[in-house]
View (spheres, protein in one colour):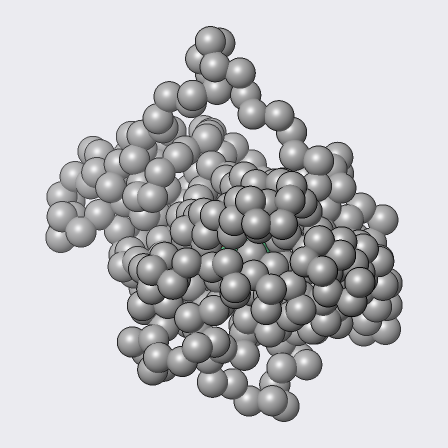
Length: 354
Ligand code: TYM
């Protein structure tokens, strides 16, 4: 990635002062074990990448990390069984192409480690109904697909994913913070009921915790592929998607001056374009020297260049699917060893199978 001055916050806006920049406040300690997950929903987009995955790659170079393709989470909404294997494969391939590998960290598929389900059941006995009812994702998805218990229990399975490995750091985008808060609550309740067992995991956010959809309406998400740039989208698709993207809504005509501070396209420049280009766009947009269309096509070329190495590695891996399957098989084996030990401890503490 080029440039990318750190930006925080949900909407495009100026950076906020970092708490940790204040010398009186010590930064939190580094986590000892990191866990995170992604749904195999067809494709991985730049929101996933900027909000989570590129951080996974960085963390995996220096910490004990597990990354999971959460297929049991994906079955909470309607899907075609025939498509699930390729969705899971695509997710694994894309993550490997982004730079994860079996030497650094464990990459595996949730359903290959059945202890996730076992711990999830145990945790349902501790999960507060009121908080589950308040989950934003539960409300949105039940509106779209109808209310069912799987959507309701979704965050409990997520808590099981994390606690099964006693992870204390969870690199996620902003949309998952509510689920992580529930995980912390469930960990506290378990420890209170059955003795100190689990750490309370903390979120690890990037400087892009919420990337907006290309139409600027809500977060970029896999459910709206036209409004999301896929990491493996071919150059022409990236150009076409950006051509239709929204900019500063107040800039109606070509010679109206624009305001980059409220422009989603300008926000994206920070993660794909160099500092000189960013400064030029900032200046030339405000003076209407630069038009929105030209700017979007300029961003498209930077996005294409930044993502090119990921696409190349993905093409290589696609010609060697056995390698991807081998990483997942090895990952499941290593994850299972940890998962079994945790479940043994959980059962012992709870007086089961004594
Ligand atoms: P999922 O598959 O929706 O997304 C994977 C990761 O990408 C982040 N993300 C974003 N970040 C910034 N801007 C966006 N527009 C954006 N869209 C997605 C997500 O926050 C996430 O970090 N429930 C989880 C999967 C999960 C999980 C877990 C995560 C299951 N078990 C345990 C962490 C720990 C989900 O659906 O992520």
